[in-house]
Image: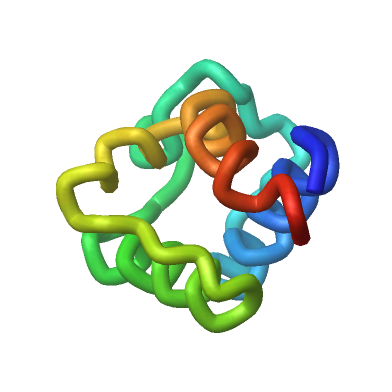
Length: 83
């Protein structure tokens, strides 16, 4: 999976987790929590969806890498390269 596909997948997961949020103006460099009404459970749902859909394991100490779209894509790119 390339960066654009990973970004689309994250948007899909976000739309499932926060269906009332408008994701059309999401800025890649700004933290998700600054742009969306996400709490810690929503964040864990993102991690669990990635595990469920793609078998991507994200250790708790790496959760900080998932703060924004840009950092999430950068972090996931090597993990999802073969998907």
